[in-house]
Length: 212
Image (tube, rainbow, N blue to C red; front, side, top):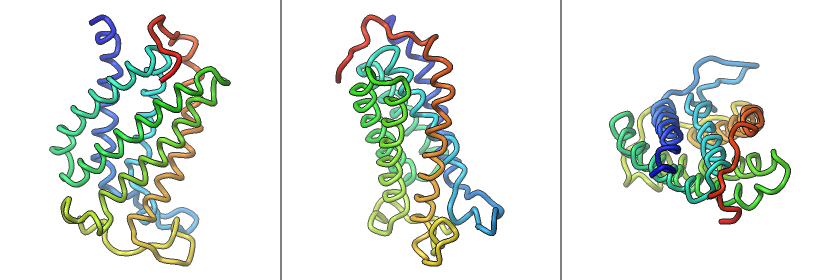
């Protein structure tokens, strides 16, 4: 019961991040930069979702992988319910599936690397978890092979150059996936700053498990 009370802030933050990213992924970023049409490569969700891995890693560091999995499971349950109201059913399914698999991979990798240099566990687990999350989400949410989950909205149709610059058109959702993961890579490195700033405050509890 005490462990549950301590992890409630993490559950609340996780739910907020996932629901916000589910909603914002429906809105491409407008405008151009260096001649690149941002709407072809990015949605606003790309800037919010990587924070979920920071939340998972801090939970894992403080309370161990078992507690981190409970936070992920709780966040998953609440986020999917709220996401159905905030976005389409297909995006909610895609987000829930990608979130669960990506976060569980993050927890496993972080726990295996937690005795390494302070930056290695959060960086490696976040980048690989983000890569798997991106592949699962964009495939389920927009690929024609998964149309049985629901129709694509008009904004997801059509083709676009890779990252807006390579002169080879691919389905727009693939260009979004590449752009999304590029942003996640950058934010993954940036997340090391807040992680490094708080690890002296977030000390591992005695119950934190050293291995998965």
